[in-house]
Amino acid sequence: MQINIQSKAGECEFTCGEDETLLHAGLRQGLSLPYECATGTCGSCRARLMDGNVALVWNDAPALAKLKREKGDILLCQARPRSDCTVRVPANVLSAAEGSHLPEHRKGTIANVQRLTRDVIHFDVHLSSPITFKAGQFVIVESKDVPGRRAYSIVNYQPDAETIALVIKRKPGGGFGNWLFDTNVEGQELDVFGPLGGATFHAEENKDIICIAGGSGIAGMMSILECATSQDYFRNHKGYVFFGVRSAADAFYVNELARFVEASNGGLEVTIAFSDEDASFVQNGTFRGVNLVGGFVHEVAEKAMEDRYSDMISYIAGPAPMVDGAIRMLVTRGGQTPDRIRFDKFS
Image (tube, rainbow, N blue to C red; front, side, top):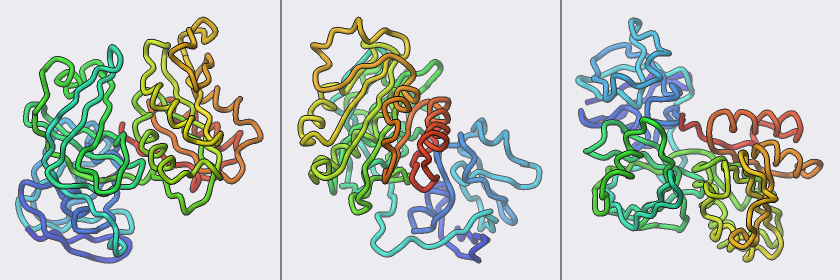
């Protein structure tokens, strides 16, 4: 089907099959359609259907409640065309710059499943074709056994990766998490779409970095740290990582973080913040190379970073209240401008 996009930047067109969403097809063909989560929860890909017909992937997508559906509002990430369509998008839709790594659909196979804590699981996905992505980006995954799509940050980093690593925290009522924890998923196939997201690391920016993460929000920051370490970035720049969990039993990737610190030539500091446990009672034997502090992670970061915010890029990921608190802190206490604060909305 032919899709005509009316935007603030003018009109453009792309083709979309009936089994693909408008968002995926447009992004895959190099158009800068607006999105954040790309899974139906945030509403950033809101548009208005001016002509034609579409079918919804997920009728209960949370962001649909925010729309004026009677006036033709749709979510690009949930709409599959049933005819040629004209869609009005309240944003500037442009073509991607030459040389950009456009998102694509790939098949993936789950392998190396590891339970890191009682409610956090790590696994690899072997891809049908290599993926080139920027450190900090995410992918959309879908299983035929679980309704809906989920967005997860890539944990590892390497150019033209044949395997990506993902980490997922089990949440009450979370269908995909329950499937991973309750089923033998080794060898199961996934549809993988990506790379996506703009909370990315660029060594050429030549800035110090601060990462503030809660729980599985550490995923994309592990990719950033791996990329930066591979380029010996911390020899000439400072890096500060603040990783918030409830207690010592909920901490993971501790050894990996310690290895990044060891390889940093003194340029990287990692602090793990326990919101529900007194850090002074935690045995340091399993936490060598990192700092342990009690408190909410954004408050711990605020105290530790006083007068150290200059010439810095900030990365934030985790539960929405933590992300909001960290952004307020970075703006009001750290004097950071929006162009220096990077995060992707997954919920």
